[in-house]
Image 1 (cartoon, rainbow, N blue to C red):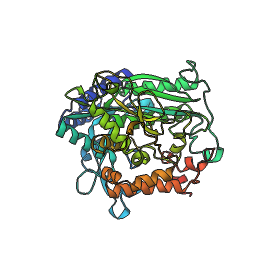
Image 2: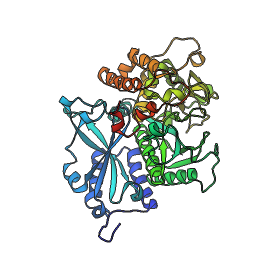
Image 3: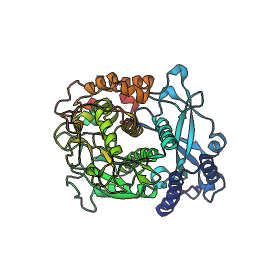
Image 4: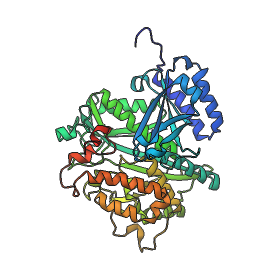
Length: 478
């Protein structure tokens, strides 16, 4: 920063206060037009308006890859209702002949951001992809999820809640994933273990810094710690309504990557970057409330879960194989479903067995929930939460005897998962035939770039052509 510049740089305490106020508006379902008016006023007349130079607009593609555009603030204020972009350049979006799409701004998903992480003078807002007819674009699963959640609230009074526990690895060096095809290995920054890390070591400093950024952005942190495997971490925060929860997953991974890069390291969300140690998951805790009452809670029910909650679980188990490709979206994800290292690959439900696809955690009237454990951290969070809630509420119920403890397993390779996904009528109900086909083609392209058998060592191609590796050049070198 030079003496000639005067861009916005707020303290972390100020940021947290501002972001929690916006988060509360979202919880209270304040009218969109009211929120839009307030945010535009923040950009034009508010106490920080003169120091805001740009608005970072983010959206996600079909695979869950986060895309970011910076708009000059003055331009955005004048043109926020006509932000066009080329959809044919986004994998899984439109064909070239029908490439024009628009971004609408979800002003309720507005964040004041730390200048030392996102750049001085910037704020951030989530965008919604709009098709040429003015409706939400079916390839933008965030919009699909938001519409589904709105329908559930308007029709039944349901609020869909989610909290995700996202594990990752911290490796030495910048861009360790992008250069894996050259180095052939990842280097741990810490070899401690579960819950153990000295206060000043790189893993602890990374966790502390990332947690501070999340706290400033209104995540309402709960706990953070090193995980079981060397250099593995998990930073937990409170639950939220389903769209806000998915947004926070995207921000969580973005923050971790940026903080790690600034520290000369790489935060990786590959499900199984190193064989022989535990992989990383994204345990997905879900519940449904109505008028403030948790509909999954029943003090007299089995495991204190209501009949509605168990029906939700049974539908997930019924469609376990159908959903696997949506919850485990990469070639590498199927290494994590290996039966060792607490792999949640059994299509059953249990209060205690962590090898079960679905677990029923200990809870009370407030916290009673269902935990889907088989989700990989690289899956599209909007896709995960949409498919889990739609299936749990509207899926079919199997007549299989002893469904919750049946001897059934998730696929151990992406090809089987692809076959299950393509052959399932339910996945077309979830996504529609067109989006289902596009998603399958993307996953097939990744699979075809890798050996059919996973083998015992991580192959360069499963990382080089991983959808979460931000390097278009590598994708073009097949």
